[in-house]
Amino acid sequence: MNLVVLIGRLTRDPELKYLANTGTPVATFSLAVDRELSKDKRQEAESKGQPTADFINIIVWGKQAENCANYLKKGRLAAVSGRLQSRSYEGKDGTKKYITEVVATRVEFLEWGDKDNDIPAGFELVDNDELLPF
Image (cartoon, rainbow, N blue to C red; front, side, top):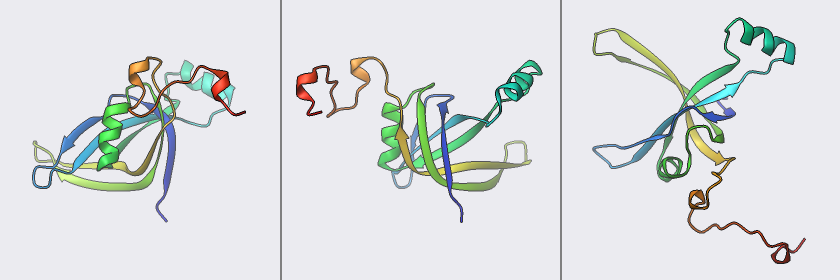
């Protein structure tokens, strides 16, 4: 079974490209995912300059890639599920390079911006308790 589920913050804005031969959209970004550490262990690691988060490369395809590029931004919280993929290629200098990344099948936007213009089309903020049925 190859299943990955992550929740973290984007370390950079998603980069959207389209494949030359098919026009298929593909977006890449990375998530900073906190490691499960006790408060003491976290403080100890931080004081020694050791990482307390892992930085995971994400790749997403199709319409979901376009949505990620349009609505996700650096620092926003997102959940990603998909599969782990390892691949290699030859670098410009002739050395073999290895990449491990998550190929996302689902991306959930867990945080929106605080500006009205960051809300996706078709959604609106509701600030009137009379409109809510509960």
